[in-house]
Length: 168
Length: 217
Image (cartoon, rainbow over the protein chains, first blue to last red):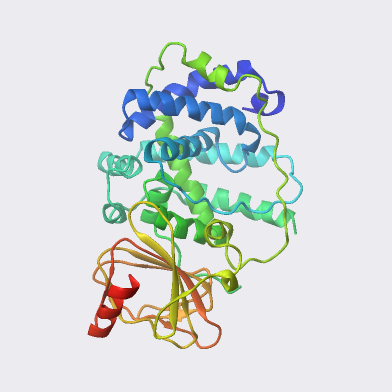
């Protein structure tokens, strides 16, 4: 990702493509799209990854999280054809270099989240997948609890606060 | 600004993160997140869950030549440079997602009277649900009403109280079916709220029912 951001390295992009495109396509199919539509959306997603590469901030999200948000948004544009209002960007000061330690810490938290998700009881895990693949009503989602988000939430909150603080 | 104490539920944040929410509700969620760092962090963590599900979604084979197709799409393009955000340093009453619908100031809004001193503006959205700005003069009550579906009410100015609690700027009330309440605006400055509903409100009295026919609440 760094080589794409800094050097517009198309070889690095091809590597990232090989890794992520099949995952994005599988994910879009799981949301109920046909393979043809999923292919189209996935191509758009990867093109967006290239175009928006400089917006990626490793202290705020992991690469997989960032690509997930792009995939979600492109799917909404192309398949659902509705508008999804986005929150206002936080106002940072002059763009600070992402702090390596923060990026590492976020990466670790993401790995812990991944492990915690993998260790959820089967039933719970299926519910969460259904919620993300839009197979549950809001009311049904409300009935499930227990997503292990504590640490990663604190990490993201810390990063937001630090960025806010740096401009004061 | 006083500390917010009423936040989005996990269910709403998951539906927003998953992108499965109608536009009317997304607008209220995005507006609250713009005002609330805590819910912004929670949204980030739900996006991270989405990222993990993406990693584990398996692998669907891409069609032959698809990488070439993407390479053609981006041929000759450098990643876009970061745009300098213009910081106008103005404290807006309406956060950006809402400004995209109604402009900057309540003074520019063409309010429509709905009776009892209350006025509203219904915003244009697609899909299920309706979202509106409500302007309730200080001390005035909104007619007692129940809901057939979910109602989200976000306070942008002033405050209101109902049977549940007091809701100040940035607070969001999530009301479900079977919940009758009568919000009353706090004395003083008018209470301006952004409210989304997914089914028509159900007013308890006869008069509001007649009014409902005309004003389309």
